[in-house]
Figure 1 (tube, rainbow, N blue to C red):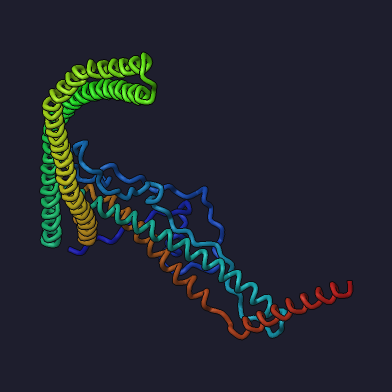
Figure 2: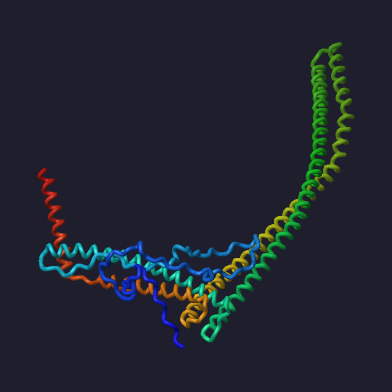
Amino acid sequence: MPPPPPPRPPDLDGGDDTVTTVAAGPAPAVAPPRQLDTITPLPPPPVVARATPTPSPPREPTMPDPPPTRIARPDALAERPFTPPKVIPIPEVPEPGLINAVRYAVTFLRARWQRRGAIKGLADEIKQDTAALDLVLGTLGKQARDLKVDNRALSAENAAIDAAEQRKHQLDEANAELNGRRVDETAKFAEVEHEKLIKVSEAERILDEASRELSIAEGQRRSLRDKRKEVERRQKAYLKAAEERDHEAGGSAMGEARGELRRAAEGHRREAAALEPERQDLDRRIAALDRPIATAQAKTDAARAELESARRSLNDAREGHRHRLAEIEAEQGRKMRELALADAEIQRRLVTLGTLVNLNRIEDPGFGDLYERIDRLRMAIGARTTEIDKLTAEREAYDKGSLVRGFVALGGGVVVVITLVVILLALL
């Protein structure tokens, strides 16, 4: 049974048949103004024909963001009735004469420039109509999938879509597994980091205590050494004073003065000897501090080594955690790219499936509105393509001789005007 003929698009001029003629063949160069206020609005697309994406499992908050999806705005994909662009007609070949050639050149340049802008606008409209057609075909394919429509022409595409959806499901499961690994790794690292931070804090406390003990012992030794230096200084002062008295006694005359000097010298020596027990006691006390200081120094060195080891262990744990997270994120990124490719393949194959359904015109009550929209979009694309071809042909249709003569005349006129201006400026 041959497929039914495509439905005739609705009239856009209030029932006039001129729209069908414009859409089917090339339009005249100068189109009459159209009454836009009498355009009959196109029926809105049915609710069942919306291209809703296949629902996917909810994404965990810690999963990486999916790649950006191109959003098709409704205003960009709306069906636009074809309206021939308003351009001035290509001028006829002029009669001989420079004025006619100049008028021809200027008019042709205007017409060519208008056609260039019109072709660009029509090309943009064709892109928008093509995007809208892909959306409608994808909606048709999705609806056919929902209704489980299948036959010999659609079986291969349905099988390919099933395989792509299965691959997408596997990728979703793999992403969920990677997300679980990420959560487990984060929780495990939190515990390990907490333990190692406790060890670091304990090592810092032990090092502080050992450093404090060492500082106290060294402070005591410094104090005792200072006292010993003071005692030794006083002893040296007494001995020096005794030597000075002896020297003075040796130089003085015999008598009571000499004996007084020698007695003074002997008194200084006794004073120095009296300080000797104190100096020896200080030496013993200083020597007694050597072992506690050595013990405190060894304890401090051990605590410092333990602290450095704990800090290295903490840094190694953090570096390993960052490395494992980087591996998981890299794997998630690869899975997300594969997931995006699977989604794109599904959308592309839905468009192909919709194209096959439209070509075979499978009978179903829910497909009627979509078939009509597809026919309208295709007729609009065809009409705009025909109009582009016509405008392109008109843009290249010119009389070369007349155009060259017109340009030469225009150039000569510009040169004459410039020369006259220069002469007038020179005379002034």
